[in-house]
Length: 274
Length: 324
Image (cartoon, rainbow over all chains, first blue to last red; front, side, top):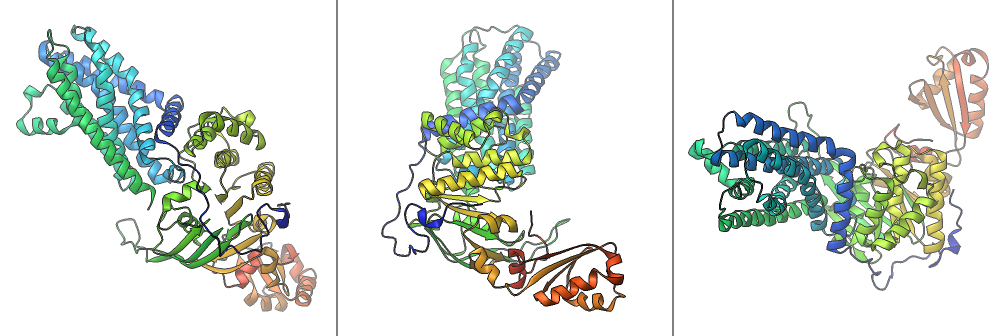
């Protein structure tokens, strides 16, 4: 079906061997980090309309359901704050950790990473774009959960604005963890399993009040990045929140976020070229 | 344009586990050497499992070979696999990265990730979708399209952001004739205007014969022949292929038919024979008359195709090449 005769091709006849090519040809430019990050972010966000909205409802209703259950157990005060903060951050853990781990696990297993690996795009743009999009999916669910929780437990909504910092920072930490798990898991089933386990940990260790837990569980709680998001948010419900501690907790989230996203980027590189 | 020397890749043996049988060590590419020239459509033809995709993954920097070299436009791809993305565009067999995007967003995003700025990416996206006739379905998610349309949408993404080399792994799988024509017209236009080179992976013999300038025939990781399709076919020019399809079983009680059995490649009810022209005439006379004719469902007499070349060169797989 090819109708172009070989000798009209620009650049010469087919028969000429190019063994003696003088210099290497010029390479097309690389895609720069920021524009490609935005492109990946936009593409991922558009996937939400197709595939993610039902799961967002699940995440939100799950958290609201837990709060309703806990209302029978918890009677106001510090425990109520912990339950509301934990349930709100649980939405972030569900989407950013669990769903992102599944997404990257499946993408890697199905060979979908080849698409990105054969484009001149910085690995960080793919990981950060996807992680950012997943963290963004969590915004409506987290806000709805937080507001519902405040109404249920009679907490003040004065400092709900702190979510503006909690969602992106807890989102970065959990999404980085999710992406790293998804990209490092040898099989997609493991990625799904690890994502689910991570979310279960965030549920048990984040929502249930820490004071009633045995020492080992408290230690595990300290190791989980979502804990610091929960603590920061819970503190903001106080009458006179200690903002230094809030900032300290958020700083831990930020550091974990940077490290886990760096690990995820490394894992992406490793997964892309086998 | 692209020089491959002594490329070798071995998959290690896998120990068996419960439910998973052990597999021995496999040489997926075995000392492969090729030269692809600028502006040609170069094909890799072979049955499934011949090592075509593994070879292509090494040429695109997706897989590190165990040994050998790959030079594309003067760049060493084995040492600098990341440069491949700046020289070539690759259409893999999987579309899972693009599945949930709309046709239009998939093309635009791919263009942007190929380094185009927004306005340029959108302009090229519109031009390519128009060229391939995808404009009417531009706003539909790729996942919801038929197999052939999905493939065409992924091909569109490959074309946004011009590259001197296109590496296409079975691009026309599942496509109807209209879509196939759109693909080859788009390829030809780029060849004529830009001197674009195409490396095509296929197991479709007819496609290989009609679109390729040169073809390398792969079998079990080795290149068993490399020439123009007509040059390859000359190697078996003295032969004619006779396909006999029996109604139920071959009438082995007819002595002439029984004598042919040793020379036939059997595949179900089909016998394929490669014969000298006068022998072929005699066989056709036998099976179209007398007792054999009653048992015959269909027969064809054809000049040799690349499939015959593959088999004549000692290709091991009796099936796996497609005539469509």
